[in-house]
Image (cartoon, rainbow, N blue to C red):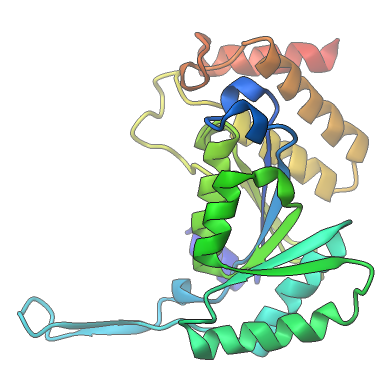
Length: 260
């Protein structure tokens, strides 16, 4: 359902912010976890996730499986352009053009073309393996990372872990032109623990904050985010973050701060 919504509504921008609200939530050493506040801008409608390919001689020792990586000039250009529009300081483009020369070549050409329009924004390019290492070494160096569908999926899960885990991570799927959008916690529906009262609601609450901001209510969005941060710093959280509260109790803790 999610992939179909992204493709058919052309929600080509996947936004995955990673902000550390309390130092104790990060697995990084103390000197490396200050001021983590970055945004991964992931291409959301192309790449390996379009489902093109097939399996030949399935179920035999001679089976061949092909998964096609689809990249268009339009798709790559518009996601890179969006990344520059939301950046204030620097955009880092991540690919694997040293090995994926055809898709990577297109990304490199579009990257250089778009960057020429934003001379006030610093630019940097990293191969995806180097980007992963740099994120672990010092995530505070990043502001905006733009990349393709597969790499964006992987790196954003990594950044989620750096700020406390998947339960905290929000995301948005948007089309800046039509304004259609879909906001969701990165962890999805978590069916294995649904209904047990142990699910961390923070990712969903922060996704709501992103939605409110998208609708033009920046003050309310900041209030929601501030209430979440206050609750986390007070230790009013679920067990995955070291707390003892249930899902609904965390929701009540955040709501109380909004009302106050």
